[in-house]
Length: 375
Image (cartoon, rainbow, N blue to C red; front, side, top):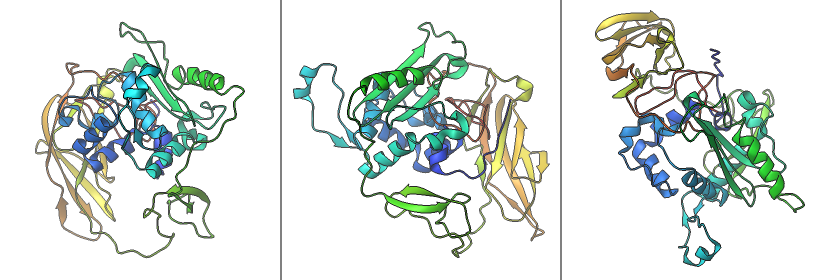
């Protein structure tokens, strides 16, 4: 298994390259309830369980929904944030209710611009996803290649493609980027054949700024820079601008309270580990990791790959910094590990990913490690 640490990444790169960790952290930031409410606003009606049932994996495809619902949701981005129910027949148009705003035009068109940016997905997809006109695309692949999908939209069309065996058996290594995406490319080529085309819409509310590649702050004359679009009020400060240092927080980032961790059948049990992690600490000297009240390991880094063990566990970290002789304790976290496959398996592993190749898929009882990618 190849694991790569990409370092600092912009949101554009995280989304374009289908990285899991940023998606999970975004879900934690907005909250499961708010995220589920937004999914319902996009026309997703199949997710009827409590958001806590799906857990963090809700950001990665735990919830089983239909391709029709996925297509419906992506039309909201294609329409600049407006939800209009899909109709099967042209005659149903007259009965369509007024559209509803789910996202602002600035948010919807910025996401579309990122998904249509070939450079944003270069790290994981190379130049493989090219289209005849500017087209936003997202792909997904389930565990063990049971199925794969891809959804794309241009200035006029939204198309969704699913591939898989109806009996649920695995395909021969077909991913969303290899199978469905190639079908989409052919479909969009035909749809736009001989037509006058145009690029995706971009809201006039967005602000274009020149930023440093190394840190995402406004560029100065000394850094390698690039252009980026920002929502109003989110343009970053200039590189080197002074800021008050934030107080140190000694807290656990992973696992989270109540987390359920599942076995990944693709990885031998002796190689599986839960990447425990604390928040970054300036001047870190050592971290003592206590699992079930016993010292499991001491590391010079803010992370520790704990070998998976079945059952209910607790963990807390004791943090030592170079400038102090006193230790700082992070809160104790309880979590559960299930090494048997007795939980529901997700139908889709969607377009979000972590910082590298390989890893575990989030399930109602699973955790994404510090490395991993879905395609």
